[in-house]
Length: 375
Image (cartoon, rainbow, N blue to C red; front, side):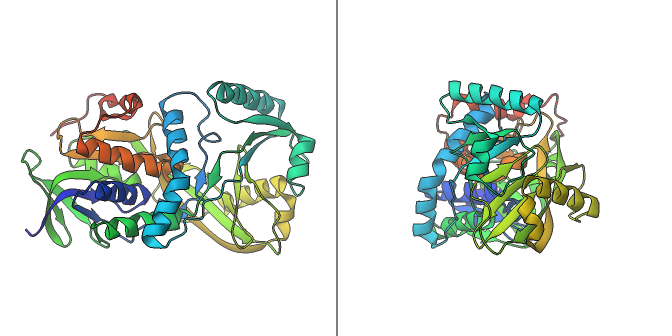
């Protein structure tokens, strides 16, 4: 067994790379292991939305986590650009969550009132105002929730920027290295057996997304989580036809640089298949054309799918293994992995360094798993 590390991170998605970055900033000696390439799974398949208010509509710990993470991005963009030269393509032109039925109108107005009460910017705007701002949208909608603070980034560039910044700060990253097992769990130094031999670390962080459950089951923890496939496609237009990100109950449309529009995403639970189905694609196209009729004349670019980790109660897991204190877990972010990556990295660094953590962390702990099966 060779070099020993302060922390070994298992999983090279956006949350693993964010954890490597923030831990490296505290002076820890980091090794990150990824069985494929960095950002090869859900992190590159995402649309990159920073939907703190569009995705999380109820007051509580997840809303606090989302808002805090969203607020990090402007400074994070500058820091990562200085360290790596990578532009994460942060865009903050807001989101419009459209309503097509009176029930949706009432629900959105209730959400708006709640969020305004929490000090967030949100407003109801009429159909006429929506069409003044986005004239290419379809006329079937009744109005929209205007969310000026939500935005989006390039998820693949964000992940690679975290990784490159971590390397610049001294971290070591190994791609195409599969973790077989974790040994010596009751010792001061934990051993990780991999396809490239053994590595030793004082702490282990599991950030393997939908694949975390398999790793943790080897540690006697039955994580209540499951994979959810999300299918997406992208098109290219001759000129810009959309400024804001558009969100409906059936799809989202995200305008990217180069007149590119990303449309997603289906939700197919309990599968690791990354195949894109004709049915999934057809449903997305139908909804996209209803939402933005001009998209019908766009040039088709490509289609893809990503596997997202969902948990039983819809909250991510951020905390220590209930039996082995050297094992830390950050998984289950579902559709909010990109949005939550900065705060996840900061909290992982805080947990390992023994810092005082926010009270809301109690909601994300592993203690909420009922009677975990321990070996």
